[in-house]
Length: 457
Image (cartoon, rainbow, N blue to C red; front, side, top):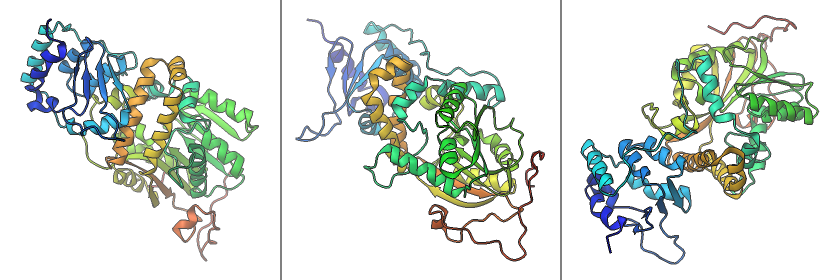
């Protein structure tokens, strides 16, 4: 009987990446159903789950990884279905932490391709899956940003509802307890944003990157504001308008398909930007801050909620996130966001870190996807479901390791009393703000048809 593929592959793995691939924390099952056992996993014990099993369903997965020995090759093999995993994805990623530093040299790649030929593996790699982004034109131009955002968000809303739950909030929730429901935690986050902004009945709120309108509806219903939301996704705008109509709030909630750089409006009393700054390039951070400053009245508040990078990392278009999740997305250090605000004359008053809340949020979304996987595939396709399964597991680990974080940054535009409370904890308790100090400038009376405010210098 001829040797199995596993028997032929085992000695070759000893030679690749300084033997790192021979020290596997997972079982490797090949397309002839032969297996290589886990060699770096803990010994089996009662109550300890077995090591994850990585299945190579299509031999071209090996060719693809050999030609692209980075996240791009692994991503193409995974999204196409050539690689499959038996077991919990997050647990498998955590177990493979020791392999993150493994690198295939050019000599390793040539050796791997020769081995592929000996095993009868096709030398042509997998074609890029349909879910892989292909962007053209100048990075962060108006046109390219529209294409990049719609790549991620113009997916049937029914798919997002399966994953995010009925709140349709696609950003970090705020948990009082790890066992709290996702819906309660998202409701708390929305209310926390509204209180930090000091919303009062009759005020005008702008939500930049409004998604499916959850903050708009909450602010209009609970705080009596008139709200405008903007998004680059037509499907999000359609759903947000429908939700406003169903809630009887169409007279107080408006949604437009527009870029923040295109908006020309009379100043708002408050501006929220939740999970949108990640789509702003580093070269446009100051432009972004200046537009927000121009869109809020003197004394008005701006709340920027966004993921930040806690460890330096070079920008790359060859990562899984860049090709399959958020094309052209960029994570900035918190200091870069705050500096951009300060350079345009805004006063940063508070920054709250919520890093521990995002793994809880992502795992709740992952559970939703697991429970609704068949429906998710039906709604958005198998590739999209696989993208989300891997992306949410990897993101939860990145937050837990402290590689990335999420912050709510509150800033005010000078020129009038901001009415912030004296104590920080009163920001979210709804405590009354102190009256303006004697001699303080009062907010100017706004005309109904005033021209857009000039950003502070």
